[in-house]
Structures are given as C-alpha cells and as structure tokens.
Length: 412
Image (cartoon, rainbow, N blue to C red; front, side):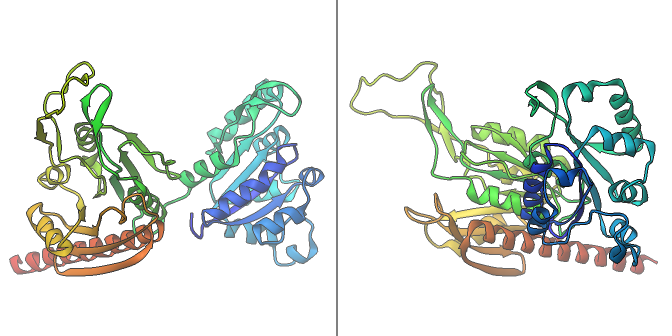
C-alpha cells in the first residue's frame, strides 16, 4: 500500500472510535490517508484525533470557504485512489443509495471516479431492516464494495450482525482492493518457507532448525512490491503476512504436492524452505519402544522440489536458496548450474548463523551476475532480494524480447 491515497470517510456511530485505529493501520502499511468526517461523527471523536494520526487536516464541511475557494471537494476526489467509509452508518448508506450530496462526504462519493468501499456498523435490527437491505443491494449493484459487517457483541448490549469489522481486517481487505503497483505488479509469486518434518514413527520426526523467518520476510516484501503471493509453509510459529495466501504442509512430499498444484500459474518461484533431503523409509504405524541400546533408521532421498520445478517445460523464473557450512560461493554456483536455476541466494549456516536469527546476509548469483547483500535484519534483506529479483527478471525479459525482434527482422 506504499504511497496509495485513501480518502477515509467517518460517519456517526459509536464505532467511529475504531476509525482512529484504522488510520494507524493504513499508514503502517504505507498509505496516505485523508479523513473526511460527517457532523455526526464529530460528536463521537474530534477531528484533532484524526489529524494527529493522519498527518493531514481533517475535512468536515462542504461549505469551508478556504477549501471550497479552490473547489476543495473536487480536489479531494481527484486525489483519492480509493474512498473508504468506515464506519458507514445506516443513515449514510441510505443517503449514498439515494445519490444525496447534502454533506462533504456524500458529495465526494457522488463526484468520485475512484472505487468506493464501505464498512457498515449499526444495530443488528437496523442491519436486517428491509430498507437497509434494499439500500445495500442498490449500492452493490453500482459497484460499491461492502466490507462486513461482522457479528458479535454490540455497544447496545445486543449480539448479532452489524458490528464493524476490526481495523486490521478492514486494512487487509482494502489492500486487496487497491490496484497493484511496484516492480512485481501483476506478477504471481510462489514461495516455500520453513522446515519440513519427516516421520520416524507416529510421535517422532526428523526436521531442521529453520524458523521460516526469511521466507515469510520475502513473502511480505514481494506483496509490498505488488505481487500476488502464495506461501507454502512447513511447521512454523509465524503469522501470515498481510495479503498473502498461506498453505500449511508438514512433509517434503506434502510441500511438493502443494507446489505442483500452484506453480503452473506462477511467474516467479522462490524456494527458501529447508526441505529434508532424506526421510525414514518405512516409518512404523506405532511408537518405537525403547528396547535396544541403539536404533538404526533407514533413510531414502526425498524429491528435490526446486529441481522438479526447474525441469518443467513451462517454468517460472526460479530462485533457489543455498545454505552452506563451507565453500559458500563455490557450492552455490554449482547448484545454480546443476539445477538450472535463474538465481540463487546463498548464505553460511551453522550453530549461530542464519537459523533462528533475526539477521542474515546473502550472496546472490545468477548467470552473468553476482551481488553481496550485507548483514541486515531479515525483513530489510528480503526487500533487497525482491528488488534484485525484479531487476534481473526485467533484464532477462528485455533481452528475450530484443532477441525475438532481431530474429523477426532477420527473417524479414
């Protein structure tokens, strides 16, 4: 949402106080927020609160002589990329459905060419009233997106539908409504993250120390760069980045299956998961008892996921990860060529390096290129890596297009 311009309309109702948190959530994601308040909204929260949180003077009056001298309401609608009304009262939905322009917010909604979204908030009986339902149907028919309402405890003491969605949930929905922008806009990125677990018996497994932090940081960075992002994640204790679709798996075979279901429509595949190279051959159906001094477990190779994707006839741009304990560049370059990858990001791992750490550093290699990304928090490092992927992918596609033009010219 970096740099996205959102006009937030706040209408009267007890849920208006949540509008302040919504401004904060939107700005945390990089959006610019201009607040417009109805007269009723000002009875619940002061404009000064929203001004402090948005960093912009709040607009409240259609008849503001200073603003309207420059046709201020027209300036507002030209500025906004999205008009979001939250909370949207029953009265405002009725006025919007009727096409009224009797206050600044209603006028803005009537004059804008930007998408409009509304997050209703009202008593459950008001929400279920036939008039409200008819107004909602009219608005949806005109393309207004309804965000909610939620269901639960209400300020009046009743329980039911009509509750304003939580600000975090509204921010997630708004992010999905905004047109993508950034170096990966309109790209679909598939990422694997975290460890896999290979069962020894029903209660034990073989795994590794991957926390999944780097993969999830890359997913967040790719989403911020405008991409549609899917993460196939092994068992990790991490929240899903906003706007990212997550598929949870456990074993290497599970991860392979999930990747093969998604990869056909992916433009970029980034393999950050620490997938087990071996798994127990025949895990028993019951727990292994402690009956001998030693225990031998026969292991077999797992399928190499990134090599499988790279071998597909129609393949995405593929980025692998090499976690090495020695000869980092030499081993990474060998993997880049052997597995036919487009790019590989390598790092040195060990007892106190990379795994379970907030920081990391990467050596990124591709055919004809090399770049070192110095130690930094994984979130910052992920942004650098995603920017580099976008840069190299653009160069690669530019060269392909230029070659095609040269070939066509030669044929002509």
